[in-house]
Structures are given as structure tokens and as C-alpha cells.
Image 1: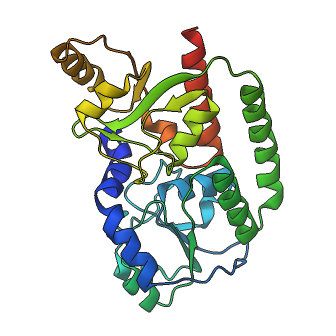
Image 2: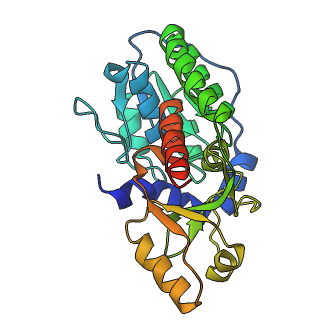
Length: 284
């Protein structure tokens, strides 16, 4: 999977979330009751991040279906479509014991087809903060009976995060971009903003209501960030061009891999936090 494919799910969400997420919320309401599955339950995951969490819980053998954006697996698991267009027929044919999906990834998912399939479903709520990610992971552990595995992992992750929070240096202003053309960033409605804040980076785009807003070049230039992060491999050329055209000094531009930051799992959160924190403090 190349870098563009890895960031594509979040880019697609940006374009459709404002209307379709509202539609999905208003027409279909799923139960908040937390189910419990057996140790040999067959799982279909429609979220690459949930799939990664299933791997963290040592439950790869339980995976019976994943999307085309799933992380690398040790065995061949049937693909059941993509994030926005799951193949209901394939899912029904697999006949899983449970299907997991997330409000984070699937604002336009075919809720009606999923509900009519009568397959047991569980929808995880959106992640805006570190605690949201932890809460969803704990729920997954409860469903799968992996409390002990999750507890050990979360203890280390909480310790690692606390050490960073206790050692943060002077705050810097910054911005994070998933794409340069268009300029797709993150607001405080996205968990990525929380990672930036934990690292001591004040996000200049935090106040937008859309979790992944498309911003103008003029807004960026006027906001004067000290540092810019991007998962777009061509971002440095883009920012060099716009700052040169505006006759302004270009801020530091850091190109980073999407391998962790585009996944909302506890381990990916802490790895992304370590990267942001380490990069910022190297500049002191």
C-alpha cells in the first residue's frame, strides 16, 4: 500500500462528512449495548484502525473479512470492499459472528444494507481525544474478552504519554496537513489535533468545526505557523512555492509517514506523539 492509499480514507471523509454523517446519525440509531463474543468468533472489520487493534489483541485468526485499506496481515483474509462502499453480499456470504465499524471512518456507509443483513453490528464512536481512543479500545477488549492483553498494553502507553506531558518544552504554533492540493488539515474535532497538543504544538487550525477542514492558502499564510507537518510527499515543494510567491519566510516543513498518524489506535497515537514531540524538541 503506497502513501497516497494510506491517507485516502481521511481525505475522502473530509469531502463527505458534513452531509452524510448527519444523514447516517439521523436515520439509523444503533444500540449502545456492548456485546460479548466467543474466543473463536469470526469478525469482519470495516475499519483499518479497528483491524490494527484486533492485531494488537492477538486476534488475527478471528478476522474473516477486512476492507481494501487494511494493514498487512500474516494470512489472506477476504476483502469486503472499501470504507465507503462495503460489499454487503460478500459480508453476508462470510456470515460473521460480528461486524465492527467506526463512526470515524464510515459517514456514508450503507447502513440500510448492513442493518437489513441481520449481521450483529457494533459501531465505535468517533475519536476526538486520547481518552476517546482508549475508551474505544477498552470496549473492543471487553467485546473480545481480551481485558488482560489490553490492560498491559495501555499501562505502558499511558506511562509513555505521561512522561512526554511532564517534559514538554515551550509551545510552538504549527499545522498538520494530510494533503497539499487541496490543503486538508485537522481541527480540534480530530484526534490528530490532540496528538499535536500533547506534543506542545498549538494547532493554528484547531477552531474549525469540520474535523478535516479544507483551508485557503491565504488563511495559512496569515496564521504564521512556526512548523508544518504533512503526510504529502510533495508538500515541501508546494509550501516553498506559495511562501516564495507571497514573499514570506517559509516555516519548517516536516514530511512524515502516514504509517501511524492516520490510524486511531493507542499504539499509533503514542508513536505519532513521540515523533511530533521529538521533532519539535530537536529544533530547540
